[in-house]
Image (tube, rainbow, N blue to C red; front, side):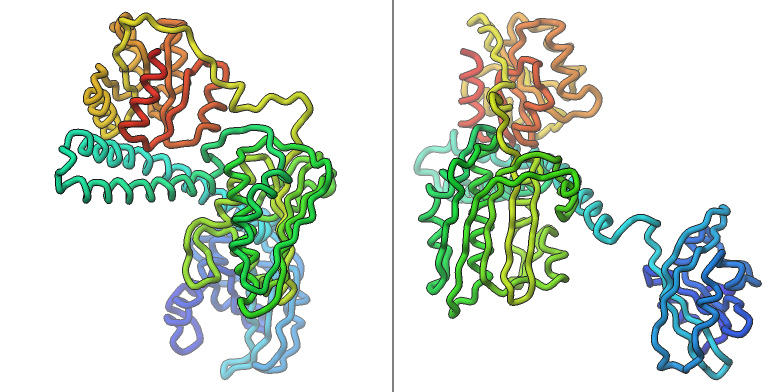
Length: 510
């Protein structure tokens, strides 16, 4: 068929360039003969014909069915209403792809033209599913970025703490170094938000009573209220406990209450209601949560925050879980996207109901704690036997040079001997040759070649009583899940400074 830059219309090259920028499939045909006059790149890709359609292609040949409805569009000129028809398009590989076309028949100087437009998403893939898949991919990217960024921050914070340790108290350099360390600490806070968004945050899982948590934080919640707004609690009696990180649940509560308070106009009377209840989710409702947060059937504790504020339009609702999206002029953080990651990490669900001028209701579902359950974070670490006092050297196994260097420097400054390995294989070799003097291994969880878990297994093959502290830019929950039953001694979150490193090492060497 005619390619870009050709066609019966004036400025045909510009027309084709514009059409090729369009994500939807676009086709223009002669209404009388059905011959395809031009098609954009999206349609050619959809049909599997990147080199273009044949010159003699017609609508009847292109459509297995539906061509009659398309050809029968009334010729009422450029003001004709847009019609709709379901066509089955024949692809280059012989397969048939359904395509819901919108079409219009237009009369021009060269005769009547039929213009057709269709979405090119694969069959069975909804816009919501695509959006959820994109968010999932962003989550994976965010987790990887947070991990790598935490490695860099370990070097920055570590070197800053080393400088502060060796500088005299009256050194004028201490002030700028303190400020640099503070900025790095704020960057570390952002990486924690990224990990929360990716569902890989640092959690300490324990039995949590959400009613108790809400009551304990009522004072902080009331400070977020506008002058004429009121906070109301409707807490279900005898609420079951959940297995959760208390701090993360507090962040969820405060995030929702602050958002609800900000949705109420400052000069208007309004209310924010915090409710709790137990909700049973059956098979038929297990997949009704947005943004891909599907939940398994079962019993859930529901934390609900409802406001009487301005509500959200469908367009705004579709974007609220996007990173850094904000209706307040500029994004101020990961906000609801981080909240979504926290809920996902707790195997929960998140439901939203809203309408313009009708307020908004968020429901967070967290699984009811099973009877007799043992908190995961408390059960996983296994303390190995105490090492002889002579074994005081620390082996640092990490693939990031900056982490190895600053960790060994911080240990040396504190009088602790250290040696370093750039990967798991080198670490196992060093441990095999020096395990009589090595009393502790600091082991990175994520490394090329041998993974942290594989390295741990080989270290234990050399010495079943090896003492290992896992260090990682990912969170503790992820580390404990991956090292369950392996006998790790403790977990040290990156980025760490000299004080936290020495504290963890000293405790492990006792």
